[in-house]
Picture 1: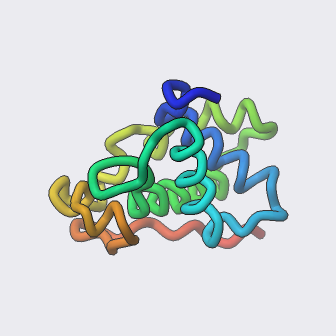
Picture 2: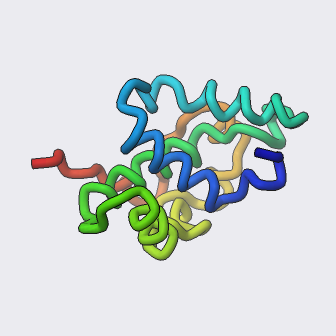
Length: 127
């Protein structure tokens, strides 16, 4: 995969894949390293202005889990397509919970910060 291929949609598809197909991974513990290493492997950097963004990543991991708890779609492709069409799939979705200034702050890029507008929805436990 090239850096240009690492779009918003690709991020979400990869997140859904990791959560559903890679049960051997602890996504919460490993996602920062996975994304940071990929960024570096394609010539990117992870600094205060670019690269890995911890709060956005963790917000979307929560959102994808919520989507998976609610969706009736089966199969990876169908789930990814439905996710991309859902509210969670929107680029602006985290801004339901975070002010722009907080979400795009250096602190939010470097580590997780709690939302300042509304709490993130927590996925229900699977039955």
